[in-house]
Structure formats: structure tokens, C-alpha cells
Length: 366
Image 1 (spheres, rainbow, N blue to C red):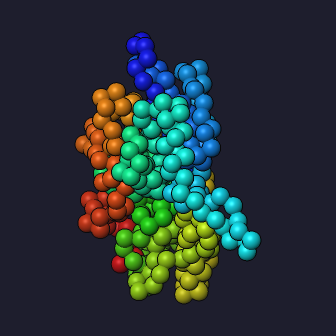
Image 2: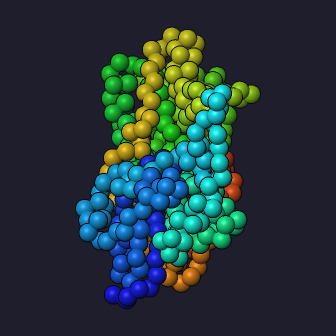
Image 3: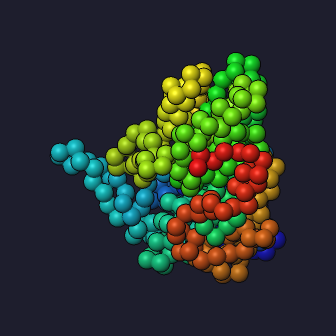
């Protein structure tokens, strides 16, 4: 092992997802093997602001590979450029720019590069720290939604897809027994990757995704066509961000002063009610929710997360800063973090996966 190669720090930001601990483990082990000190930052950018950092060794990451969540903790509320630091006399939240605090804390710990494991929000913050504050950063793409640009796959997605597929398998038996229409609402925000992949893998009859606005009449025709064929049940997978033709997304609630103010949810229940009203067929909705985010990561996600963690430290070793590690053509590469923090990656409507679904008779609501 090399000695005194430098100092790195790692944090997990945004929502949790399976595979975060696998990345942390790979980062710590690779840094240690190459003579780097590695600090773990507690609770995302909040810990970076408060200076809550702990020196880590391989002992600290022993046994965490199969664990869900993150041993470092995370938050999706603490944007250091717009940090809630209290309330004024009128009860209004006071926001401060804490970039100088972050820079000073990193200097105090002599950190050469900050490794940020996160989704679009965390990577945008990392990009700003790089561009505006002179902080060396390396990003690792994390989200169950699989909607980050520049990479073919984010870790966490495979586990979420597997959970949704298992749910569909279970819904099939009860739907068939009771002759019902069963609707499964899955996460994904404004992208339909989870719904598309799990819907095909789970044998859904209809898959509704944000990228293809759906026509309720088209969905009902599919259900009725199945009944004429003697199939007395139907399975529908719907992404939380799906919307009808000419309509809007279904919003569960608005959370003011939140990093993500619009909270999606409810499209599945709305769809089930509409189907039952129009067809008379008993229809039920299951919202999979946070079950998609928790639990042990799949073997694929463990492997991908490990590759990402190793590649992030390798980029630091090479002095290749201000990049995000990414998967392209089954190879781990690096891309500029500013590019990686750009527009989301949506499902192409001409995707070969959608084409395959159409060929086997799946209705996409159009």
C-alpha cells in the first residue's frame, strides 16, 4: 500500500437507494489500498456544512455490501447554495449561501477531491461546487429512476425493477382469482424506466409511462379485448408521472421550501377508479412506493456500484476531476460532471424495448 497519497472525502446525497453501501465500500477500500485517507461525510451536504466528517478504514465498511440504505446517512433538503438556517420574526425561512463554509471545511481536512454519490440534484450541486468554488469533485450516478444522462444505467435501478417485477408476479395470482383489473403504480418521477422494464418482465397487459400520454379508451379496449378472449383479468403497470392525453400529471401534494416541491402520486388509484366506472370490472390499485428504494441490492447493482466506486477513486488518483463515472457499452468511463447534471434521460418512444412490448401485445395507452 502506498503512503500519504492524499485525502479524499465521500458523501451520499438525495434519496436512499440499494447499492449506496456497495459504492462506499468500494471507495473506502480502493482509497485505502492506494494510500489515500478517506473521510466519510454524514448526512449528505449537511455534514459537509457542519463539518461532520469521520476518517474511515476498511474495517468501517466490513459487512455492508449486501445492506440497503447508506451507512453515512443522507438528505435531499440541504442545498449549500440555498441552505435553510432558521426563521425570521414572521416565521419565514432564512436561506444562506454556505459555499464558503464548505470550501473552508474541505480545506481544514485537506481534502483533495470530494466524491459525491447522488442523483440529479446532488450532481448539480457538485457541478456548481466545481465550476464556482474550485472544489475538485467526482460524481457517481445514483437513482432508482435511471433518468440520469450520459450513463446507460444507474445503480439502484435493477433492484427497484426486480421489486416491481416481484410485485407484479404476486398481483397476477390475486387478479386471476378474483377476475379483477390490478393496477401497480411504481416510482420513476418523470421517466418511465421502472414501469417499462418491470412491466414487460412482470407480464403486464398495459404499461403507461410519462413519455407516452395515455388514452383511457385505448386501455379499456385492451381490457375488453382480453375478456373476449376468455381472459377475465388484466394487469396494468403505471409510472407515477404518467398522464392522460391533454391532461396533467397527478400530484399527491406540494411541499413548500423543499428541494423537490412537487410530490407525485395517485395516478394508479385514479386510473383504477376510471376503469371500474367505465367497464364495471372490479379494479384495484397497489402503490409500491418506498419498497422500491429499500432492501438488499441485487447482484447486478452490487457489481455496478462496486465498479463505480473503484472508478471514482481511480479518477481521483489520475487527477481527473470534475467528472462523473458512467456506464457506456458495458465499460466504465468518465464524462464532464456539468454534462451529467444536465437534462434528464427519458425513455425514447422509439426504444427497442417499447417495440418489443408492442410486438408481444402490450398496450402503451396510445
